[in-house]
Image (tube, rainbow, N blue to C red):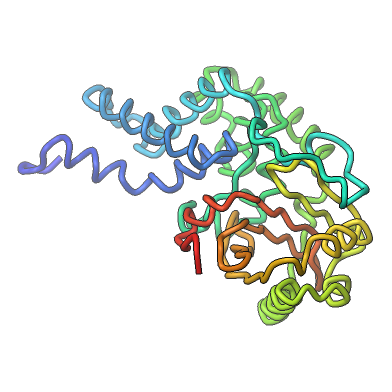
Length: 312
């Protein structure tokens, strides 16, 4: 602290740069942007209250992560895991017999790239993709924490053990169990190969144009054979190109659609407007030269989180 610097000013200077990466960390742990924001606020409040006792033996970053991680673990003791429809049961087969929306289920949420840690966005495949966040929610809290700290943030076993108050050997055994379970839940997370940038832009442009025109033939050409379509808060989901195309054939074309590009979870996406009104946020998973998955969050309020209007 400089001669003229006050404790609060020093605290802000030391801790302020870590807010976005702490938000990303809490989001990985909880699967909810709103819950993550609340936990980051709690983290900074706890840190300020104990700042007088902070002696600098750990870096401010490590100190804040320790507080945030324990706040998340405490929150997880009193909350249900966040899910996507594919985590609830078998895929649907009849697009004309969709069940009702279920807002009571704690659904996973997307995070806007503008809110997340820039480093995580750049390496989105490694630690921020929607499929990974969804899979993490199925791990027990301690396994989830160890895997995030060790494999996503690249902390050492000793650093992770210090945060959790367990032995480094326990960290390693927990990490092995977490990796094995994650491989069963989402074995292809690290195998996603997106097209190069020009092909990627062309693919997304063709997808948006086909969706807006309700061009079923073009959408069929753009989807992978094993494409998946999810629509939280509707628990129904569809797997396989034929099933997805059956859904789109039944649902598209009834209202004028417009897609506005956005970025979420380090992935491309769109805000979807029907007749000028915000309707959904789509997060797109590309694989090779095609669309492998679309998670369409049917929640108009999410559009505002991406800095977009509710009406265009």
